[in-house]
Amino acid sequence: MPTTNQHTVSSPLPLLHAPRLPSLPYSDRVQLKALLAQPDFAAGQRVVVGGWVKSAKEEENPTAPNPSTRTDDAARDRRSKDVSCVEILQSRIPLIRNLWDVFGGSGHAQHKKRESALTVPNQTKAFPPKIARLLLTDGSCVQSLQVVVDSSVANPSRLMPTGTCLLVEGQLKRIEGKHDIELKAEKVHHIGTVDFDKYPLSKKRIPLDTLRDYSQFRPRTTTVATVMRIRSALSFATHTFFNEHAFIDVHVPTITTTDSEGFSNMFKVTTLDQNQKAEKEKLETIYENEGVRLEHVKAAVKEKSNIVEHLKRTESNREALAAAVQDLKKTNDLASQLEAREKKLGTSLKDDKVDSSKDFFPFQTYLTVSGRLHLESYACALGNVYSFGPRFLVDKTSSAKNAAEMWMVEVEMAFSQLEDSMKCANDFFKYLCNWVVNNCSEELKFVAKRIDNTCFDRLKGIRSDSSKMTYHEAIDLLRKSSSQTEDKKFETNFEPGLVLTSEHLSYLADVICKNPVIIYNYPKEAKPFYVRQNDDGTVAAFDLVVPKLGTIISGSQNEERLNMISSRIDELGLAREKYEWYLDLRRNGTVNNSGFTLRFDLMVLFATGLGNVRDVIPFPRTYGKADN
Image (cartoon, rainbow, N blue to C red):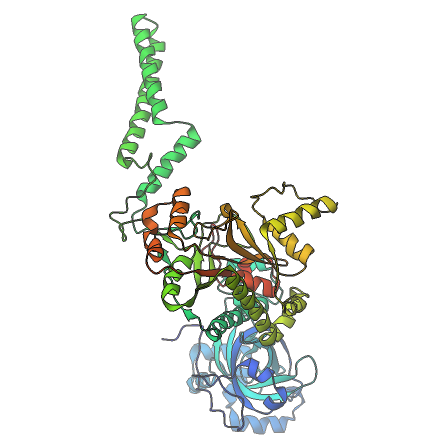
């Protein structure tokens, strides 16, 4: 059953011209990108296009004859052929039209039938004919198509609100001015109206942080639509690169029992009733807000009981004894309430562990932070493998580079070492940058105009291999720069083992190297437990750091020696039983292997020059935000 704001008339006519613009598969609709890219070829063709109104204006039709200039004879002849006297009176005198609508008449039903919901009858009017000049976008490109709809085809007031969805048919023609081509609509096949008072988009540009509250509508804006096309191109380029280099795509699990990093804050997965947890939190809130705990209340009961007994023995005045007894009763009541709650909750107040025996999985499970450990299983059988999917991390900060759900490209290569992984990561990064330049030129022009005018130069500059330096060399450069440059003083002491912050890394890429840089051989404390240990006490791990953004790729050679990785698990106090399956890879047919992770959302951020990762994720999930 059609909805109230959708209307369908006749099906679009088939496109008869040959050669003609190609229509979309499974549709007679022509994509705007196809016709706007070649206006000379498109001009004169009859097409069906669909999209959403970006902006609109109404104006008088300069080509239509004005009713007031017609001769009475010509008007009378035309009316005698097309309309009845009653219809003439209805169109001329509003009162008569209203009365006729109320009481009906012989021509009433026929008159109403001719007035469809979409099409206005081509009859004489008391007011000058109007046209609606619309800018229509279908999301396929940056540009919009100008569509002209005469009031004889459809009521302009229903077409013009921003966000209205239209499917129109007409002829294309070349024009002079801002737009090279326009569509003269001859039929309107569909109108999806909007609730003007509640629809959040308008002709004016809306800040990106405001748009985040309307994830369902924000892709209709030019900026977000452009970013999503670039994201789509990068996704396609990812699969193309690994297909060209003989990698196999493997889907790793989203639900896992293993903390792949060894120190992550992970989302727990459970189907258990959370009432018990809510009760515990409620009781803890009472404790925190009122400063009251059961053990303290019991001590108070004992003390106040002694006071009552003392007052009874000394035969004090009755009022003091009554007040003490009442106070003791209130304290006893509070102790009983707290004791009852704790008894109901059992040991949960003292033990945060979840009893998983009755859960969907009879052990604690999590949303995965990284798929590299699982991916390694397949690398040890298939050779070179990769995975592309969402990863999850509990992060309550408001960082512009992190979200609770982010997409990662993860790679594992059998029979490879750290140098191989760094080479592959660098080639992959260059491939993505070149792909965007070569395949998203129109999008980048818009980005350069609206967001970041350096985007072309930045992406084109990624031609050669990135600079490389060890962690200790990076520390030395930062120490020297901090001592020699007055306008840049870091607050930290550059001692061995220092964890490089985003500020340090950005300074290395932006100021010192002025180019992407690979930093490798880190202290083991800074990297996951599975990274191979070097003879000098460092581990075989690396980061690819890019200007303006920081770390975009992290990788490592993985530890293949069973005794070394076992010692590392024990050293970090990890639950050994959760990693037995991973250790089996070392016990049975072990191999040198390496890999890396590219933070895909940050890659989109780098390509577009935007400042917040929430603006490049279709539906961002962050602390307190998961509304749709």
